[in-house]
Image 1 (tube, rainbow, N blue to C red):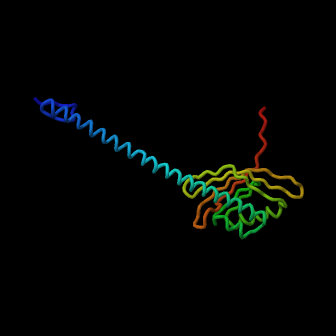
Image 2: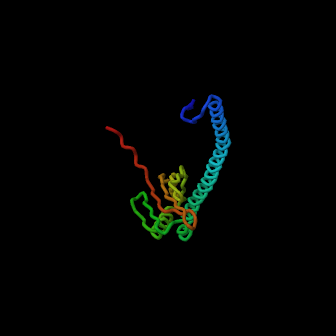
Image 3: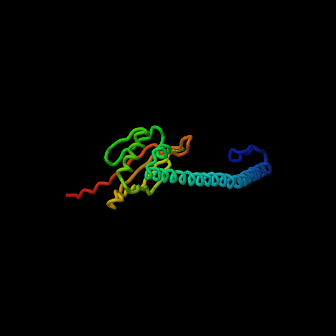
Length: 186
């Protein structure tokens, strides 16, 4: 007599069907044990990759924070060469007055001219750094320029596009915004 066991095996006689079923159970159990051994290994590899990305991301954030700090230092000391070295050649800057400085030369000239006009120090307090892709970051921060003579400071927002180049992280674009008062509803 021929017996079918759920489409898995064809066998004759009950003893072969039981033995074949037991073999299938044993094979399934061995497969499960292999999977249970492999899954933790896969988990450790993935966790290791995430940890490496976390370490790398932290190092990249630190490098970007240092770049922004160097920019403020170069600008406050009115050092055109140091300022230029922190930008990409095609950098641009849109300032709160609406002036759009295009190209690294225009950005540097404008930054130095602004620093000479402002007798106080400027600072950027970074609020967020968001990586948009490999080698590209968006930095948002509070930008403050203090006038030493009057003690009055302008409090603005700034957004910087930071790009990783063969010279390391460099500023590709800056957008400065002077918050407008919120209009009252009628």
